[in-house]
Image (cartoon, rainbow, N blue to C red; front, side, top):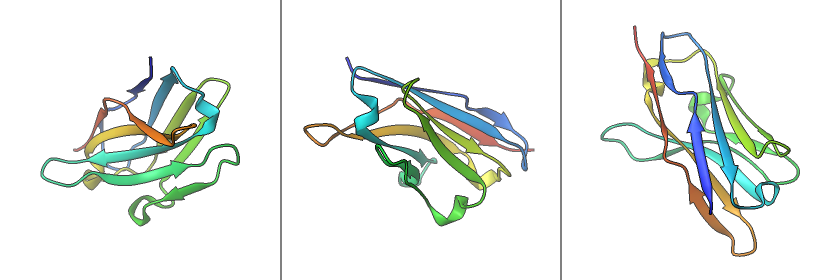
Length: 118
């Protein structure tokens, strides 16, 4: 049974940091590229960061470059998003996505809320 379970969201002050985790199970994690998306109320879902399978190549949306870091630990079947220098506009539900495998399918987590506010 495929599962992606995000954790680590919460309320943080502007300029603060959070680390999100996405724990995967039910598929061969190392054979999937992993991504973090976010969706704020009234806005479309946005790709924030992704990390490739095997070689670990990373990509980021321009608005988070230099502030966010995506990483993966294949031994733990977990992908992380370290978020530093958080801004109010980072407020959103953050979702974990896996893509790959024999069918080149994708799976989504349930999301975790990140709120950046004074």
